[in-house]
Picture 1: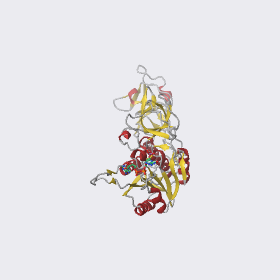
Picture 2: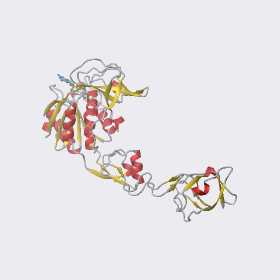
Picture 3: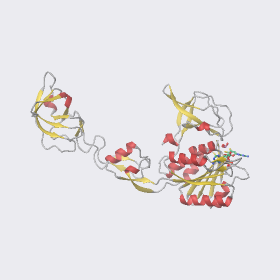
Picture 4: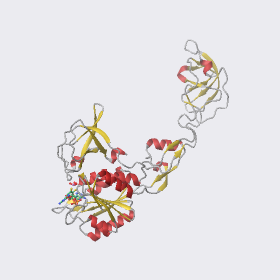
Amino acid sequence: MRLFLSLEEAWEEIGARTTTLGTELVALHDAYGRRLASPVQSKMAFPPFDRSALDGYAVLADDVAGAAPDAPVWLDVIEEVGAGRVPERVVGPGQAVRIMTGAPIPVGADAVVRLEGTERDADGGRVKVMLAVPRGEAISVQGEDAPAGTLLLTPGVRIGAAETAVLATNGEGTVSVYRRPRVGILVSGEEVRPLGSTLDPGQIYDSNGPMLAALVRDSGCEPVLYGQVGDDLAGTADTVRRAAEECDLVLTTGGVSVGDYDLMREAYVQAGGELYFWKVKIRPGTPVTFAGIGGTPMVGLSGNPAAAFVNYVLLVVPLLNKLAGDPEPLHRPLRAVLDSQIEARPIGLDRFLRAYVGVKDGVVTVSVPGKGQKAGILTSLLGVQGLVRIPAHQEPGQGQLVDVYLLPEFSR
Ligand SMILES: Nc1nc2c(c(=O)[nH]1)N[C@H]1C(S)=C(S)[C@@H](COP(=O)(O)OP(=O)(O)OC[C@H]3O[C@@H](n4cnc5c(N)ncnc54)[C@H](O)[C@@H]3O)O[C@H]1N2
Ligand code: MOO
């Protein structure tokens, strides 16, 4: 087991020990938020045919070259084409086809005059054009969006609204995506009680379990709750083993420090696991532990709620990204101008402060809540968007550029 790694070393270890999950086929309407597993090429041109971008008349641009309100040009209307129909006639000199937005351009026509620049005569046989248009006017050319055979989407892309529209345009009713990681969550501590129980003196409600379930959802993954274990090593090991069998990743909280009852690492080993590292040079969340059982990674997060939150954002997010098929699983922190005075207290560990991200005079800024940053303080997490990194032995002043790690809710 490696001890006391830098955050970068921890990321490397996690990356090297984590393999991307398998794939499955899902209906496009169930694919939102999933990561694409295969490249997608356009099977046809987008759009598939030259089509009108306006309601109006398909004409020959040369015919209407001099058209104006005081110099109208009269054309014979030979056909009407609605969207979804195919024109049957060829447009020749002196002729026009009434056309709707989205309808195919008839052969012969090379421009569309918008309806507002025309007037139909009483019997509908002719149209008065009062607007000159250049060749190509209001025609969306076949393939102008993407020619057939274009690489539209690459594996690992997260399917959002734009990707869904592109996939649907390509006729993809089902798509191949990476499996959604199932994340087991187990909290420890004799003092921690599930919601609904009556608290005895010295006890508190479990907030880590519900918090992690929400973070897992923010990451687009499926939380699986294993409840709470006490100071019973065998019972904890049993639950850890079961969770590792049933899930793609196991998260535990608490029991990773040096206290007499801090048994999580031992429980991992008893469950058949291998410990990869313990402690990372970050605060809060220093005693975080990384291990694995039979290919299932496990992260032992600090018990302190805000420390567990920071452990999740910094270490679990890239791990989940890798599991879920992200080709670039590591954080890409935002650079922002520090808009707070940071208490100068170099501690030899990189500090991660809960922070509000905003925009001031067009510049991305980050500021730190006035409330405490201690690992046991929960309410200073409310309303924050990210974590500011204060590197060890540095005291960045107000106005300096700093790295901000966005919460999964804001970085999907
Ligand atoms: N002698 C030392 N003591 C501690 C050290 C150290 O280096 N030497 N490290 C401190 C640091 S840093 C942290 S972080 C904590 C980590 O402790 P554990 O991960 O073992 O967590 P616990 O002791 O079980 O709990 C810590 C704290 O959080 C509360 N807690 C735990 N689980 C929950 C939960 N599910 N919901 C809400 N609150 C929870 C628990 O009651 C404790 O107050 O260790 C320091 N100690
Ligand atoms: O490293 Mo401990 O995280 O929060 O106080």
